[in-house]
Length: 509
Image 1 (tube, rainbow, N blue to C red):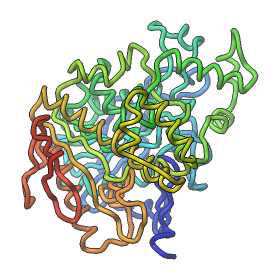
Image 2 (cartoon, helix red, strand yellow):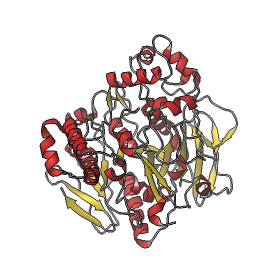
Image 3 (cartoon, helix red, strand yellow):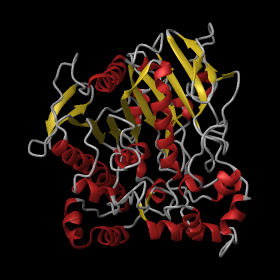
């Protein structure tokens, strides 16, 4: 199989089909050795796996199964257990429409997290990294097994990866759900799952040798957008001390991606979704709770075209006045974010795979740009001209990269730098050998998590740099040290950032 044909992307979902990647291969990365020490959590004791100097605990429940009457409710506490629970296998992935890998196990009982720790005892107090996956809030970008914390944990940090609900099960807003809430809100259940996982870390990570006062939350795509939200959410304050956001967008009205919905829009989408089952009026939610999770997941909108996924109505976060107090871009303009040390950036070709399948004619392109940019449309069309369908596709990819991702990173970096000088911006530009999509959306996570692909010396070096910088930042709040270049702190005036490629280079906007 050629390298070119072995890379396939669908929407925000990254699929690496090189014949080496899959849950069976990744399960083999975790070796059953001597039984590691039993760890006592606040819900009960667990045992895990020994893996080359690390202790690994997979499938730890951090909330009750969000099933039955708990569907479309904030995560409830775990039911404590007696004895020692084995946590040696990943929990099920959250329900999603047609997982790309047919072997992916999904279940509505999905609120599990995973821990990799190099600590030998609870006395070590190591820094902690908590990862939030992408997937446009509708799927997992791949599957949880791809986000193996081994490479980062080997650098002396405790790594946590967590599930959260996606699609309609994670983000349905509806007037009837509002009436169940003391705050008259609904939706954002996936964000509440993330908060519950971070609260679990605060309560329990010390038992794994982690320091709950030194938590770095990091995420990619929808995971990075989640971090942008947690930085301005009053419910998330104090749950982490640093953040890394990779290729997130957050504009309420973006160039091609509307990343978050006003409350009324989200509720209308929820009512339309319920009407698809023939339900409206009183009792709608109780009838929908009687449906199987497969019926809900399979009916969740998920167009075939990548461009339609990001440019159409699908379930995502809501400005509910609670978890999300207001439009994130408004709150960053007002400097209402939690001023923590931050790494923020994006990939040089984020839009290449995400804008795929637009299939626009030149007249349609011009109408689309005018609908999106209003009085600025002429300037945009001048900067991104297109005289053929092929040129339209290329320009849509560039516009998405420049406006939805690069400008979001610059905007957040500028706002945060006004509050905390420990702000660093990057652009990831490395192109994996043999694939035609450039530095595509999510390609850095392949190297950050050491997903098993053919590694030539250059690719291995880029991977090592990413792992070193991210883990060093988690330890010290500064990614510098051991590099041939100094990554400057970001300021609006200078606009300097680190270009991550075969070599590390400081550039300026």
